[in-house]
Image (cartoon, rainbow, N blue to C red; front, side, top):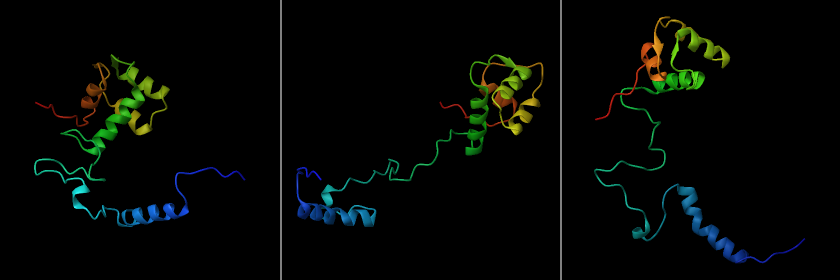
Length: 133
């Protein structure tokens, strides 16, 4: 077995392990010198600690609305537009879309033409994000 050189030996490895053991076990900073810890957010700033962010949901929508529109968009693609109900149903069949999605799109009026997934979502009664001003 070949032994390579390292920057430090077993004694130094153990001391490094001991230094980080508190941090690993506590799940928080264990520094003795408080000035080395990162500062907390200010009063007018959001808390960005680990796990504090939720999923991105635009104003006016719920996570379910986002999931429904995402499923619609991923199964239709962007090359189908402009499209009527029959073209949408044909694309969903090509992409083996879930049957509940196909059933929803089948309820659309046959004589309407849709320019994008947003128009289809509105026609299906899905919530869409409100405009930001």
